[in-house]
Image 1 (cartoon, one colour):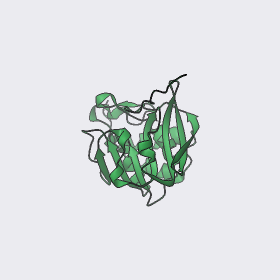
Image 2: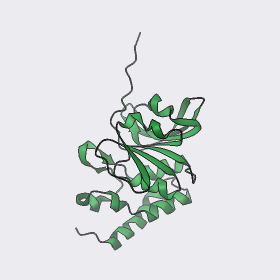
Image 3: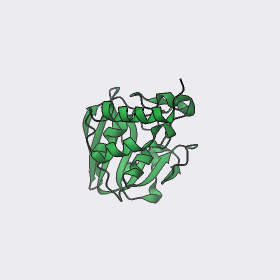
Image 4: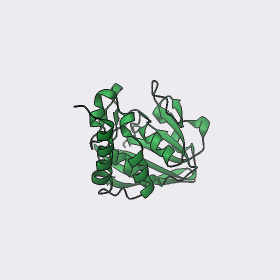
Length: 210
């Protein structure tokens, strides 16, 4: 199947109307950003025909790109404001970074070694669970995937009152969650069950059982 730029534009419109607007992505700024940023530019060439499907897109190294709906829900919960300093964990191909930038954020994107350069964002290469302490503090922690636990190392890089959006893994189920940091403590609330990519390196530490 040969997909033209006109096809991509039509698919992007269909994605907005059938996936986002019908599923609690109701922030006009988020919808406008996702309607204008060409997601196909952030998908490997051999998988571009999958760009706008509502499923994870496999990447190299066992990673995957989250479905558009997941990104839209995370962005909606994040309530991004122009000028926000954002710590993006799991930059992958740069799609979420491009959307955050379109919303006016200053983005520090963390990706493992070999991740791409991302226009408009500062990329820090290293373990996802270590964050980017040199750029701290941050107004928003945006974890582009599900984790068993948000590490204290990331929470410690946030300002008091910072917002956090992420996926969490609970008993094999992935859920969208959001919360804030108050006095150095992160409080998260589950928002909705949703299929999302699980990020590597975030296993919950073993706890003693008496």
